[in-house]
Length: 172
Image (tube, rainbow, N blue to C red; front, side, top):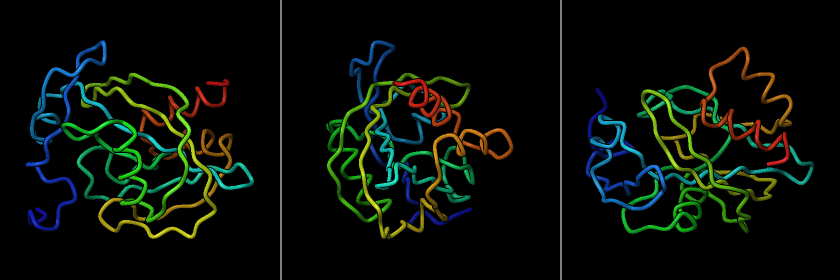
C-alpha cells in the first residue's frame, strides 16, 4: 500500500458529482466516487505537436483507475466548485508542466462498470519539452491517431480514451 502522503489522488479530494444530464448534484470525496462509481466530470486534454501527432501517456501503476494503461489525454476529475476549463488548465500544468491555449472539441459521456464520467474534450498544440508528473505519468511519446488506435488493439488503453480517439478520427 502507498502511504497517504505519496498518493496523488487523496481520498479527501472533493469531486463534483453530476447526473446523466451532466447537471451538478453534489460533491463527495474521490474515494466514495470511485467506490460507488458515481457519475462525475473530467477534463481531457489531447496534446498534439505541430506535426499533428498526439502525445500518448503511460499511466503510472499507482493510478486509482486504469493503472499502467496508455492514456490519450492529460486531464482528470473536476473538483468541487471547479469548471471544466479550470480543471483542464490545472491538469495540463500538473501532469505535463506546460500551459497552452485550449480549444473545446466536444463533451462525451463514458460508462463502464467502474467509471461513469462526463468529459469535456479539449485540444491544444505543444511540442514539449514536458515535465512529467511522476505520480501520474510514467512516460510518453508522440504518435499519430491512427497508430494509437492500432496500438490500442494490442496494449491496454483507457477505454474512454479509445472512444474519444474514434470520435476524433471520425471527425468529432
